[in-house]
Image 1 (tube, rainbow, N blue to C red):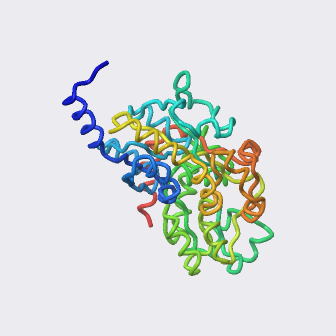
Image 2: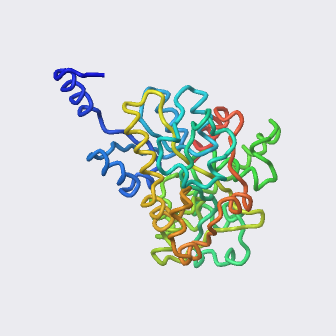
Image 3: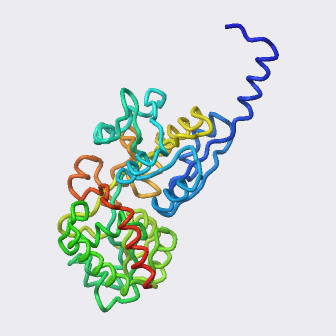
Length: 344
């Protein structure tokens, strides 16, 4: 097809005016290594916006915010999809797709048709309790999440804000499966959550706040992701990440694409950049989670994994813990947890 000179100029001008893509993501996952490949391709920095937890992100998008690429975890993305916020991602346009572990590429429910997915796995990790081994030495050999309810440490513990972490965690402590609980069991979980709030210093999903609280001794133990432990361990602080009987909670987080994105090529490039080799190495070496890009992991020394107490195989990892899934009646759970937290 021939294009006239004026039409060609207009086409170039339109392309040049395309706005940078916007990434709506957890704080740690918008560091420069995740954006480097995108910036090299488009010679621009993407816009970045942080969310503290997925409930906050969901509410903001339902209110009209339209980022291009978002970073929910596996248990959350179906809610966003059903709300009409997402569009399928063409995996043939992602150069790093085939570097992702087959276990993650074949997670149930992510397929959106031939060569298309709703959710691109980005990294995997776990939720447990980071605690000060010098301030609570009795829990070093006898690791137990009951430290959260130990009267000795009342006012010196913290838990995560998001219901996808805290509700299954506390439910598990009283023998309830949060993903299949009955109304009566949910009442029991709520009672335990109220008791938990009476014990806590603060509720937060801010890695920096959690790390600072543990480093200063303001808090002795905090429900956290491994990133909190990894940052303090790297600084030489006396901390441990609990691995009690039954294992920790495990999760997979990923990337999705908004249905009303501004530029598909830029959005896809931003996803590809986030799962690229440079980003993958940074994930394990500096954040403490493990990347979905298993090809890049092959170049990471064994000492890095040993230092964090991690293995290389995602399938073994996920089977060893309690995999975080989608909560039923989540809106009701969010409302109840918000009310319970108000008792602080």
